[in-house]
Image (cartoon, rainbow, N blue to C red; front, side, top):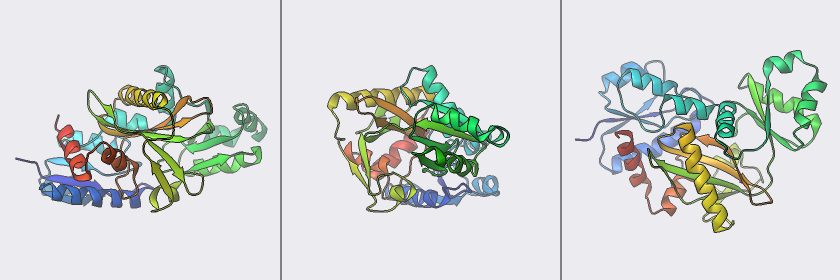
Length: 310
């Protein structure tokens, strides 16, 4: 007998709107597969709502803080409710781009050169010192809030005069900023599926209408193009698949995750970040990768439910 599934969506992160769309798509797919499912907007009453509705399994459709960062996972562990996707530790690690970087470097996984700037450092140190630290990487760079997704709190810096604005934007969301050297070349994403023996699904090359795969390009129909297979050699595709699976295991992911890459002019791939709850909207990458592997959206949702029970 299948458990009653609570699709946890919404929440209070900056990615709430995307989560509502992801959750709706998942909910409809589960109903199509014959599961008893209910949508549950995550608020302060979530514990009572989970108990009241006799939820046997939580399908996490939350993005960003309080959903993708290990907190809801910890709550579900306390309630003995199984859930889809990665556990507490992997979720918390992947949500923090700076901690992810440290693990990638420790595991010998290629990732762009970077430095970090804290809000305290930014407030108390001379601007010239901060600027020198960042320009030392070599411009252009990308400044990112440490714990945001969907390219929220991100600035592309081509000129040193943009550094202050970029850091201020990141500090709206976090007390730490990651500054990463820009890798110029195709952007490739690898969707990974599984638990102990994860498999990379067909890779996707992302081409944005604006030249930047930002929030608008990600979630507006027609603003980005997903090219399958990517316009890179089969050898480089195989290498990206290898690094994606290695990254997935290094972070300790389960169920699903998406590993984002840039490929430089010498055809060397670099891991940018890991998303433990990729979007599942009509414009999302993960469902496209599954489709290319011959897995329909409802079948993919069923696979994730089964992986949650293992």
